[in-house]
Length: 152
Image (cartoon, helix red, strand yellow):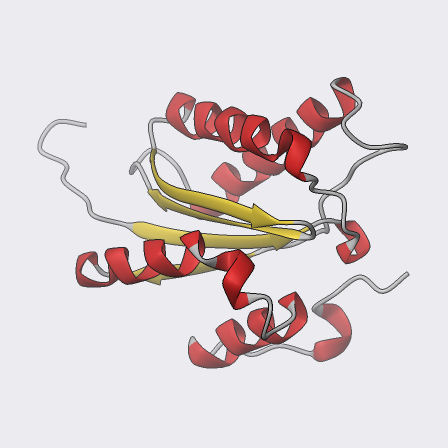
């Protein structure tokens, strides 16, 4: 794409199916590295990644050949296969269907990176559910609560 210049920062947020606490410390770094590789193969740039036991945050600079939905579909499919192939969890690992994707300007990138890097501290005060609903409200995303989270 000659003469194509973009600056598209996307903050992805998604959880383990049923918000189970399956992302354990013993493989979390490997998972982050693996997801980083997926992002690089899609010509995007990882700016920040962090997770806690039931969900993950990823900030990327999106390459113009990618769409928000295709990149996250690949990240989720390939990373869940990685977790299952390595038997990091008992049973079959799955991410919850759906995701949050929020755009930021260049001036906000460091704030978002700081937020993502401090997830463990942040979640001592707020649950993932509260955090996610706050994002939806902050960004003016219309939603029906019965479809936001898998509960079975």
